[in-house]
Image (cartoon, rainbow, N blue to C red; front, side, top):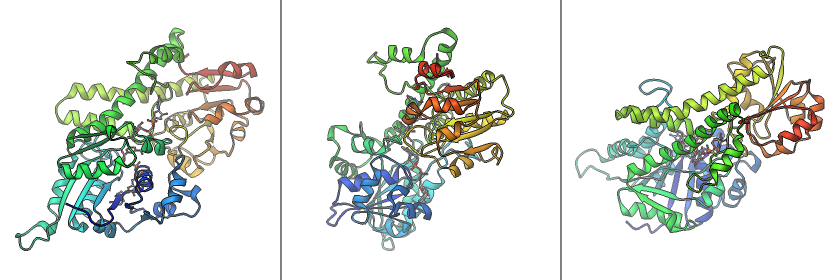
Length: 465
Ligand code: NAD
Ligand code: UGA
């Protein structure tokens, strides 16, 4: 099929993936028209804000791209049906969280947003449409999407009555990490495209080839592509749980986790990446994607495989409980009437995203023991922190501060939970002055200068040593 007109791309879902991904496509391909649609009015308003610091997603470099392309070949709107009807290519980039009820609750992905997107496409698409799974999905989801699209009312009935719509389905999972999304999209390690027909695979490949080296474009069948995304996240998370499990062993044996990381990471077969010890992985995807993999394995009767991957999540939770318990023990085994400062609430540095952040569980554990907590995070706002701690916070136990120094005021301990670079360069001497003594620093990210902090007078606990 030849497209004589300007290719029209619609992306359903203007979230952390849809927004940045489509911005980078629009920026590299001025010949395309890219419309990002969402049912969430506030989100779309924020994408269209004249104040570029108010975009709903904070990513270095994103605001500049949106500034350059918005209104030219990049558009954000709530006109879901209209955009679907005009689109040649539709990326589905909606949320796929873990199911909270029914069959597979706590493990399987909730595909209701995928299903509703597919139903809208079935209803409003015209002619031939290439439908691309951008969301992370259980293997075989394309089967579900296909069956919804093929039962489009326009395609049901006798041949004469049919106002034939045709669809091709592709899987093109996204591997960007938050905080480096634009760099990852601009210079990806690989682009993965799974599909069944060469025409649509080539159509999407050609878009990426505008700025990605063709050798980095991998094409597979649909199921390999869907599964590879889950497996990539499982392998990355597994490395974190592995190193975190060893951090505990270091603490009891006198080994030092940073030295162990260096010693093993220089083996080129192991590599240095994803070996940073910490309070456990957070973010919206690792946990949900592994649990989804676990569910799939059990579904297919592979119980040993399921148990193996589930342990990665178990260790992650254990690491957070272990750190909370250790803090309580070091502070004389009770937090009643003690004030502590939490430095960092986002799940990692350079993002305002708090989903599944280790700070949530650790803060809850400390609150449960009677602590009062002062929070400071350079990018996460008060409302976000309060809503994450909703069931356990009140006016007397949670305070959100606008500087590290204010958060430290009158506290017994500072718990560093996010690796924001600025925490290394705080005026730690001043901070020490405003704290109650003995003043503790708990460095769960192993990135502060322990000896320097000790020289000021702090008692210091650093993970894995
Ligand atoms: P998100 O929650 O930030 O955004 C999803 C958006 O889809 C929401 O704004 C929601 O309103 C919208 N939406 C849902 N149903 C809709 C419908 N029927 N019509 C229009 N809009 C609809 O989610 P996200 O973080 O962008 O993740 C999206 C997918 O990408 C998930 O499957 C996730 O696993 C995957 N992923 C995420 C990341 C990441 O870093 N966040 C990276 C790679 C892959
Ligand atoms: C992760 C993957 O890195 C992306 O490739 C993937 O596309 C994405 O999930 C997804 O599917 O959503 P992201 O969650 O944004 O990206 O961030 P990561 O940099 O992977 O960090 C995840 C968590 O692991 C963070 O809490 C981080 O602090 C922690 N982490 C990471 C460590 O504790 N140690 C490390 O060495 C690396």
